[in-house]
Image (tube, rainbow, N blue to C red; front, side, top):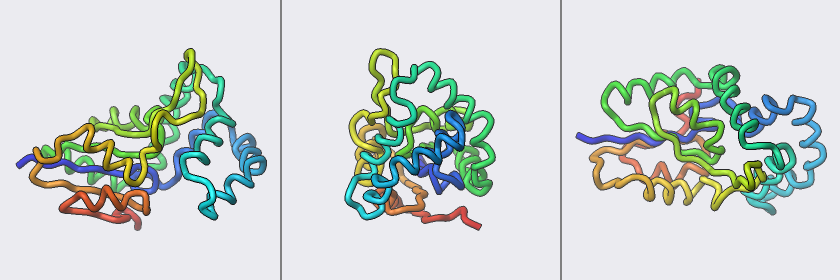
Length: 197
């Protein structure tokens, strides 16, 4: 029986929002805190649902990484996956992924975070990654997201573009927020915040 499992990343597999953590890792805590202060009106508008998640994320990424060479940015992401990220991984999530793999289940992480700092970890686990993609201009990070942020309905669209769901007799999905509701609704076995102790 062919089976597939979709995992959200931030909050489901990890204990922290990795957008903030990749900024902290590459730019330092003082720079992260400074950006919170400078962009606080934007963050307040986001909390009040006056500005989209995508626009808020783009402004943060643009503030910290716009003009940075993709080579340097990706090296920072790779280093983050190797040194800082492992401490943020929920043991239960890692064990669940390992069990699925042992049972021959295809496992895909579907995340709103950029593939740059999630895909290297996924590769180390032997699983796939579908995430937001960043626009790169002339070899430099722009801070903009290519297309739509991989969240909510877009998670389902991206899954359907990459996977023929009819080929699978059993679908699992794991999530922790409203942005995962549509993905969870696709599954026969849906788990909401399953790895929180």
